[in-house]
Image 1: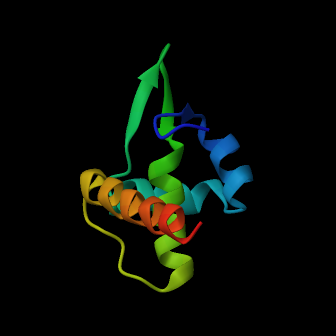
Image 2: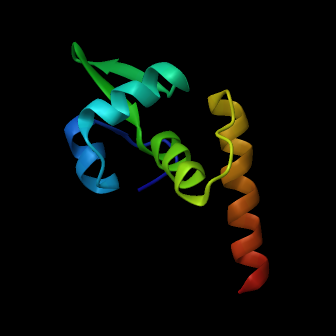
Length: 83
């Protein structure tokens, strides 16, 4: 998946092993990116995955999608430097 993959909520829930209702709460609480595609709402998987990662690591979730992009880039850089 790329950083800009938009997927339906049920698919995101399955991939993250979280309930759809949990992801909907995150969508509201953290203003997760979403876009309408042919009348249906699709979610930015990378944004949801970053929220999930922060929660699982016990870190505060950045307030905006742009801040979460920076967190993701920082993690990617650390992984590349470690390799």
